[in-house]
Length: 311
Ligand SMILES: Cc1cc2nc3c(=O)[nH]c(=O)nc-3n(C[C@H](O)[C@H](O)[C@H](O)COP(=O)(O)OP(=O)(O)OC[C@H]3O[C@@H](n4cnc5c(N)ncnc54)[C@H](O)[C@@H]3O)c2cc1C
Image 1 (cartoon, rainbow, N blue to C red):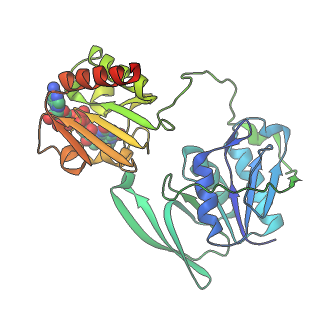
Image 2 (cartoon, protein in one colour; image 1 turned 90 degrees about the vertical axis):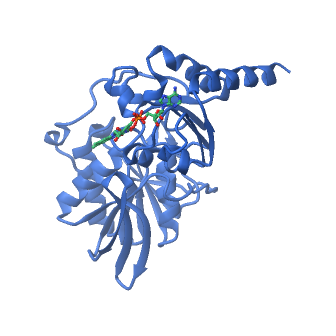
């Protein structure tokens, strides 16, 4: 079997958006085989391999890497892709180490050239793009989230089961407990992110951002200054050392737009900056900007959105 294998992450049978982006990119390279740990319906692919083993009941990166490596040895694909999430990068790094092959992480573009791939990949948290060549016979790569649109294929294929041979020592790292930290809309999936920076001034200052996010069906994000000050938890931080988001609308309130923040939200479809400094990088790069003190501006926006919802 050859073609391009894509490791698809899923949550209880629902494939992740970023994995479907990897499937879309793979579709331009050859026949796509989706690979899942446990069953998960996938459309628009030529084949679907479901890996099953008792050690793989929850996230277990070493065991998953070994299982994917065995699948590669048995089926000899031309390439194995995954999404460039923490999980995808970790598991494919194990595959690369086991098979003694290079891994190209956080790729945004693949251009086949004879037997090789010419690649563009994201480095330094997105502040630079690297051009590289991948010459290995089996090509391993993770796809940077939001580099391409997700595949929305129809027509599910019958899944075939692959049972790897895994020893207990591969379960050194595994999930033993899950704690729900947030419910409903999350920062990564929210269509609107209302994000606050130092300009918000205090933890209490975020109340109006919460109000606006609630009215727009969005989530609240923040800059690192805010998490450093203990105003919001680290899980809300957007940026190089936080979460990467790509909402339809990113509302940056009192955020200067430092490169480490920008790389976390530059995939947003529209950016609205609210800032009292017209020269702030966030303002000069945004699609829309309101120059002024964010508190009265947001209070006015919240009042107007409420008024329109009530009409
Ligand atoms: C290795 C490394 C990793 C980093 N990772 C991240 C990261 O993941 N995410 C991140 O965010 N940062 C990160 N940073 C920090 C980053 O460099 C900036 O320091 C940080 O983003 C600045 O946060 P800020 O915009 O809230 O604050 P500031 O830069 O202080 O900007 C505050 C802004 O608010 C405006 N303002 C002030 N008062 C008001 C008001 N009342 N109304 C309207 N506007 C107002 C000001 O004009 C200014 O533009 C990282 C830095 C390093 C070195």
